[in-house]
Image: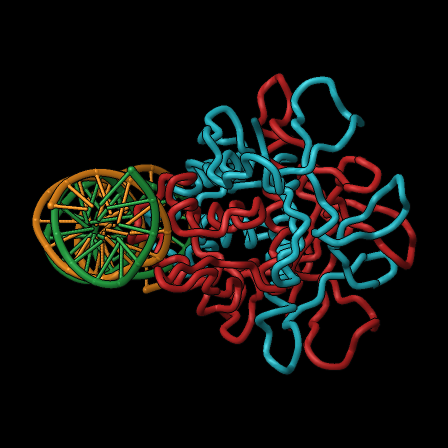
Length: 185
Length: 185
DNA sequence: TTAGTTGGTTCGCAATCTGAACCCAGCTAC
DNA sequence: GTAGCTGGGTTCAGATTGCGAACCAACTAA
């Protein structure tokens, strides 16, 4: 505030592109995410998913169909004669793991009881706990979400001057905020 | 694996604890996530959110109420006389950022058109693009989701032997998979 | 022949979402 | 002093979606 615009009421409704919105059209709801979680655990078959999640059959069929359609799963026949299928993560699907991991870690940190997190994720070779904090390969250091800023993106201009915007804002402290709000104009 | 069980149908329905499920009870749906996205962009007021998201008032009121209840937002009066309120992220809420960032990055990578991602997130001090891949502080290297494994967690046992399970599985390659399926028993 | 397995679809009822209308307090302009 | 706006809601009827239970189809095993 203080100065000019920064009205906080963005004029556009980002019609061409908010990647979060785009991703949410595929990662639709709770069930979809739980199906993905199970997929990462190696559960691949309709009935196993149904049993494990206690999900209504119609919903499961629908979600699997739409995940296949969007390229997150491939449906593969694993047996003929009684035709049987399984659903496997594609590379596109595999790369959803940071989303699941960050959900899990947030749940661990803020929602797990006194006994601590139910499960730990570790780097397999060395068994070190996974840390999802942000890491900068230029500065060679980890940093917090308050140090994130956003650039117009798209096409060329990569490592140009960062135009503070969109994300960020150390809302943690009361009134004072770096004010990255002034997005456009 | 290979040997006995590996039934892929987990006996329990993790009643005490899957942190992903726990997190999903708070991060309920698409609208909640979009509200959070806007919060990170600095939009804090009912009407600004409503306008920006074009969200039905009743839904917005409900989601804000539940986010306050769960501790993600605080409701603060920013003006008396006409009493007016705003919703601010708590530290708990701020730490949801990795979830949003990973959604955004996945969307950028897999869903953005030819023109590339609509916006880039950068490390503010140096303007380097953010990389959410996993980093191990012991091995001092980045690693892929296929190298994630999970341990029983809870309480004590930290850096013990990693018991492959839950997460992971290089589903990327066809038939052969390390098969970490055998979770419990 | 009967039962069981796997992967679904169909159906009717319940819960949820949605847009539009309404409410209220306190301005502000006329 | 009243009409109209703003901010932050609530209420309501109708559409959409979720849900459990039942059913189906193709096969196998006893």
